[in-house]
Image 1 (tube, one colour):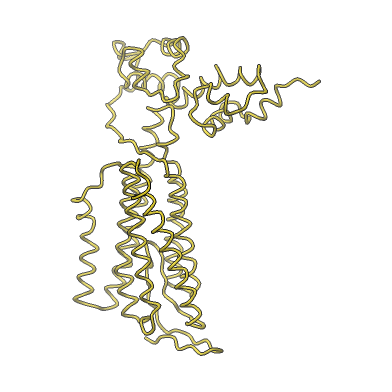
Image 2 (tube, helix red, strand yellow):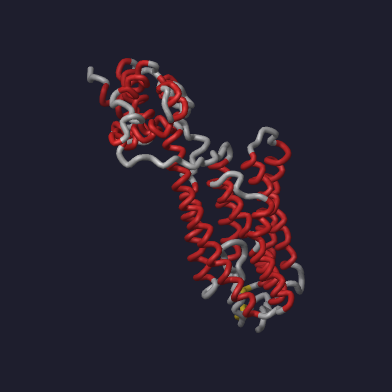
Length: 383
C-alpha cells in the first residue's frame, strides 16, 4: 500500500483502497492525488471554515440564546461536537501524518459522529426519548469496533466497520421517517397552528441522507480527491438547512392515541351528532383562535377529543388542522379579500386566525386552487 509522492509538475497514482468514512455516510478514500501540498492547503482552509461554522453556532445557541428549548440546547451541543470533530481533521494535514494508519484511526473516530445524527433525528420526532442511559446503549457497537481495532488493527476491521455504519445509517433513516410520519399525523390531528412544531422539513434532510449513502457507496469504490472538498461544503449546507428550518422548532411529545371505533354510528353514546361541531365552531368563531387545539374544541363541546377527532376523520374525512384552516378561508379570508382587496395579505391572514402568512398562502391555495393574489385579481371587476 503506497502513498503519494508529489513533485511540482508530476502527478502519481495512489495504490491504496482505504474506504474512509469521513463523517456519516461519506467515503474519502483517495485513489489519485495531484499536488499534495496544494490539496492540503485547500483541505486545511475547508477544515478551518467548517470548524468555525460549527463553533459559531454552538456558542450562539449555548451562550447567547438564553431562551431556548431542550431541542435547541441539544442542537447546540451537536454543533459543539462537530466543531471538535472537524478541528481534529487538521491533524492529518500536518507533515508526515497522511498515512494509512492515521487515516484509519480518523475513520474509526469519525464513525462515532453517527450518534449525533441519531440524537438529532430522535430528539426531533421523539422528544425526550434520548437519555444518558440510551445514549450509552447506542454507543456500545461503536465502542466494540473501536476496541476491536485497538486489539486487531487490521483492514478487515475497517471494512466490517464501514458495513456496520452503512446499515446503521439506513436504520436511522427508516426509523426516523416512520416516526416522522406518525408525528406529522399527530400534530395535524391535534393542532391548528403547526408552524413551530411541523417536521415536514425533515423530508429533504432524509433525501439528502439517502443521496449521501449512495454517494458513499460510489466514492468508496471510485473515490477522487475532490470528494474531500465536496464533503466539507455539503456538510455545512446540510446543517445550515437544519438550522434554518429548526431555529424556532419546539417538538411536541406524541401521546398514545386511544383505540377508536371503526364506525362512530355503532357507538351512539359517544357519537357526535352531525352538524353540532360545525355549528359550535362557527357560532363561537373558534376558528379565529390562532393556537386552537383539538383539546380546546373538545372542551367547548363538552366531550372527549378522541370523539372529536373520530368525527372529523370519519364523517368529514379531514384532520383537525385541515378543517380549521378550511373554515378560516371560507368564513373570513375569502369575504375579506372580496370586499377589501386593498387589505394586505398579512392583515387578512391575521384576521382569519392564521399564525403566519406562509400557512395562510398554503391553505388558501389548497382550498381554492389559487394564490391569494390570483384570487384578488380574478375577483376584482374590470373597469
